[in-house]
Length: 155
Image (cartoon, rainbow, N blue to C red; front, side):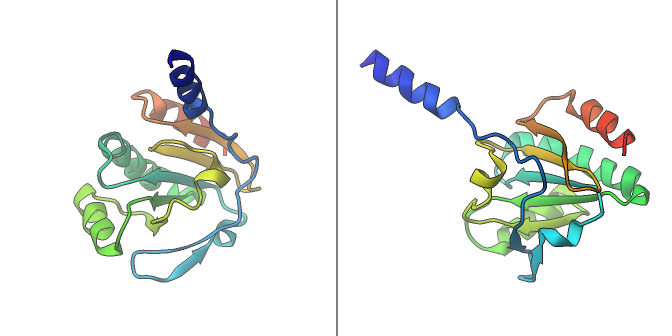
């Protein structure tokens, strides 16, 4: 019995590797308009997988709002991808309450989890202008903003 539990815990802790380049995807925004990852071609993009119910995601959002403001002139696009189940209205209300001023897409079925290789949220991915992965951060770490700034300053 103990071995079975240990095996399950070990399997649960495994995650698929982060993508080397920005994966191709299409997701709706909160108004239902479908957006493609191709829109970010030639631009650096920071993607944040989050949810309205995620306490640590709420810690990350103010950092991302600040980063969006600071690096927008360098062409950075910050995109929040909500993995909330259900309708867009709940996500829209949550995004407004958190003060999110960057683009929010909705992946209600978490279809991109296998593609990006995350098994928890928040999960952040920074891709350069060439579409190559520069940084991947899983979970919340109070020091993550410094890691992001260091990577962004290299853009």
